[in-house]
Amino acid sequence: MVWYDIMLTKRVKTSVIKNVAQHDTDTGSADVQVAILTRNITELTKHLKKNQKDFHSRRGLLQMVADRRTHLRYLEKNDKRRYNALIKKLGLKH
Image (tube, rainbow, N blue to C red; front, side):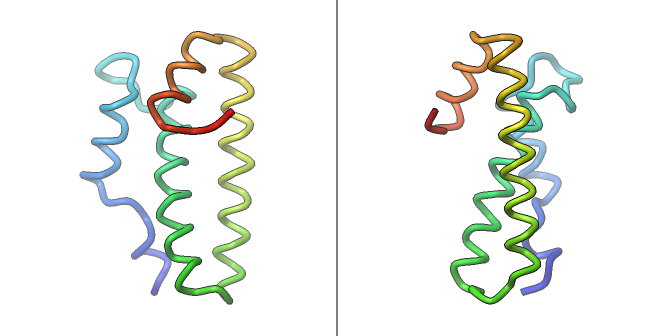
């Protein structure tokens, strides 16, 4: 499997953004970025279950998890209500 098979398609990414966007043109808020990262993490995890020796992708996965954690900390610190709603919507554990 090649790296571009793992990336989200435009249609999937748009639907992910639509589910958590604060307003119509919201594409870069912490909520949206966490949702996109979560979807990417899910896809990459599936890939790594099949390709256990793909260490480059594993490193990318760890970077994505760290990036998502940073965005979640920011949300938790600045807007607890949005943080709790996002955690519930995405099905993440706290």
